[in-house]
Length: 233
Image (cartoon, rainbow, N blue to C red; front, side, top):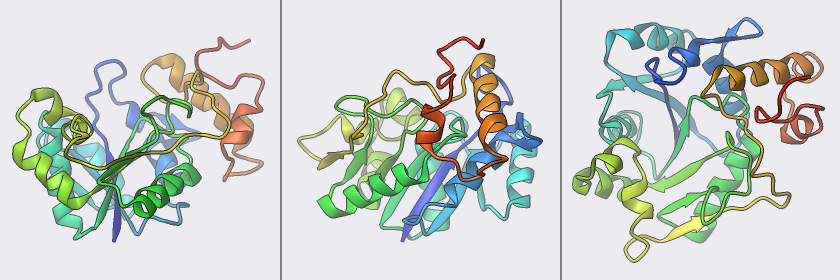
């Protein structure tokens, strides 16, 4: 089974509550889930959030989407992610996604999963050794055994907070794969960390969603304003 786990929390330091910010009347995480459910290579999708009270509204909303939710430690994200994988598995491959990417491209996620399985890798991503995809299309696939090893052995706080560094920092131990774009655009920023990022995403949905709810990355690139790094107007 291929299980995708979407990390989400309300306590973002730069833009608190962003995952529930509305985009065309729907919380941002709902828009992302709509896109993720178009992926052909994902067998299941779940959310991993914290057990803090400020994440109660997020968990409640996800349940309205028929989306299973695991709640665990806020700071030890590796523990939370691993326990979510155990709760909603067993899965051979776990795909790590973050809930600040409402323009996520399901075709790119499928591409990462396919490369991961075809290469027999322990870990595969689309951001190293160099970024070729826009920020906000990031995806990671990890073999269950590698994730378990990271959970058992990682002691570095950075490796506990960011889930996969224990694996990709050890190429001598784990087989690492990568996916690159045939049309590189690493300068584009489609993730949401700031109010300007959120304004950009709302602009994209306002321009494209009504005409094609399944708009893809090429349609975003074709917009007059195609990145949050480019000022509006």
